[in-house]
Length: 302
Length: 251
Image 1 (tube, chains in turn red, cyan):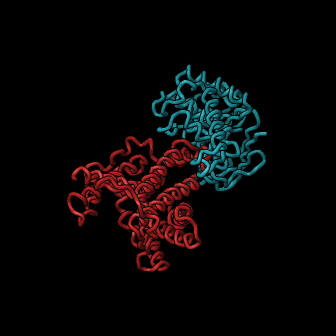
Image 2 (cartoon, rainbow over the protein chains, first blue to last red; image 1 turned 45 degrees about the horizontal axis):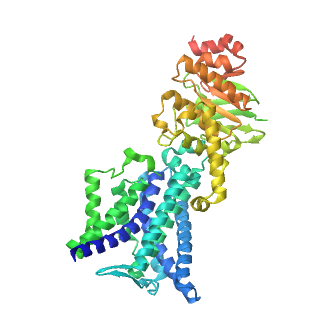
Image 3 (cartoon, rainbow over the protein chains, first blue to last red; image 1 turned 180 degrees about the horizontal axis):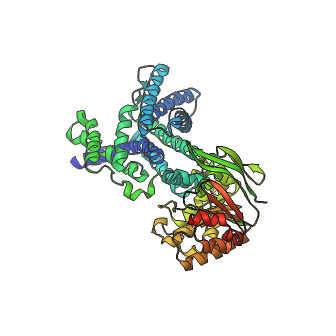
């Protein structure tokens, strides 16, 4: 019983950790390239969740197969959030590129409030329910149960993480991102349009966050306009834990935060589950501000 | 017809007049030396040409097109590459990757194609690697191409800067003190390399303090002092020019 409980928590932890990892990547990539903590990043996650439910409901009403609805909604929501992020970057961060970092940070906070309220005004203050028929079903081994949805989430997360690694380490866009992160002047002098690369970085980060938003909506069954805040901060904690600016670190940090949260909820108390991510954040900032894969091993920085 | 023309370039930083009416050309097949005492404005000239600084007045044209006001990446895609006085490699990337980055403006694949590894993307990637390898081998770095840049010895890092500039397939290359910190044997080798670069049909504008290098390979020399051109001509004439001697030695 105890062992089965442990395995069950492990599976839940991987699911949640993967979602945090996807969000954390957006923080870390943007930080790596322009040294800005994009506090509006959680809102891309929320926007993705909403876009997902809107599209899935619409497509389902057109009589499409649920999985086809999900796939199309996923792609479109990711695209939508990528465009949204590029617009935010253009509007709120690009004019402040040469201003102090504090100015850009405040602009990010303002953008976060703006986007959150925008979501509230357009979508209403009540939670929006995800269609549950897609999420039903699963495997059972004794007391361990794995829903199809969990399998879907883990598989999608894994493929997005692999895709991102390929993109960053094996392609010209990835090389340009790494070069821009290391030296903006020099990368411009070898022919890279850094503004474009920065926009692409925002777009990729927001696309991943949108995927996470849909998965969370499916997993918990609903989305709300405030949903971006807490997961956003937890993913930020994950990015710091992994070493902000470091892609591999964000993935590891996300998994750790997800695991800790699930295990703390399972073994200690569900009431306090949100606390542990922040204890970790404070602990990391206090004892090892560079995080697990901090700046001294920054060859994976983007 | 790689032809770089600077036309009455002035640069002011606040009250400081960094360059005043600088005008010279770099013609096809030429190696032009840009010399002058410290603070004369040599690197500023490079920064104006490559679009890092904006000229306060005057214009730079290349191949008959005005390039003043273009962004650095646009200048590079016109065919003007440069190296830095203090080495600015992408320290955490391998030698090969450093060169591959320089191929950015010569390749097209976007995010989606890159993730899906489309046949077009793979072909392009193969071409990028091929070009980068060729640039490294040209500079004698074929054996160390998988080394991380920061682990390379100083001389190799200097050569890698030039290899990276060559990897962008330029028609003109601007070298900022390429011989700085090199020993005499390495300087000799560098001069031979620059000769080989011109044989590729690339013309060279270089800032250099090592007079042996400058006098040895430059077809023409431009002398700056306090942002003003005080002489231009053949190496042997420059060596005898009283203004130049005065600028270097003081009165």
